[in-house]
Length: 305
Image (cartoon, rainbow, N blue to C red):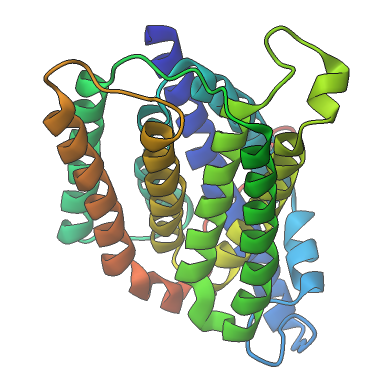
């Protein structure tokens, strides 16, 4: 349990720091597009084009953030196998707090009192969840459910990407939510993946859950990048928190056999509700940050330059 918690906290730190670095890179790229008076960076609906997203992805800040995301992915995958999903996903989602704090220094964002209060609610909820968490379920599921997970991942990422592109600048929160659902599907996939323990490469490669993980992970990162390009970093991250916490947590209890400690079921429910409510509040109060998305952000200089 304690190793799982430490792993989840480390994953959260990687994800939170990575998100802010990716936001710095995305906004720096957006300013370059604007200074060049380029219209190629947006779609007809005002959203970022694939080319502008690709340009954002090759800034050094974004690439460093992506490296941290991959490290966070590995740590999060381990946490998902060591803890109940409602606990591992919620602790990992505490990267919202790290993102909010780092965005003050690196993006020049000032948090309002309601935002700080909402972040405090999320932290309190994590304490309740950690207190209530019991043993994780087995993770053994019929092969048909692995296929359904792959179908769900493809649908979320494919249909979601098209919808967000049509919504343009109005789709930031939706992009964050869909990226969270993608990461949530990734967490479920890691939990049910066959051929891991004991390791069996043919079994691993034949499992649809492996490809659900790849689709959900890559697609989730793309949608998160879009959300950071067009909207509030704290609002988009909070929406991501809801997506990657609610559905996996419910599936973990109903589908995978995750449980709380005896007599602590109400504590787990209260912590879960508070975590989601706090994240939604951060998204709501931070929705106006996008108005300053194109403003200058703190310039970071790589060591040795």
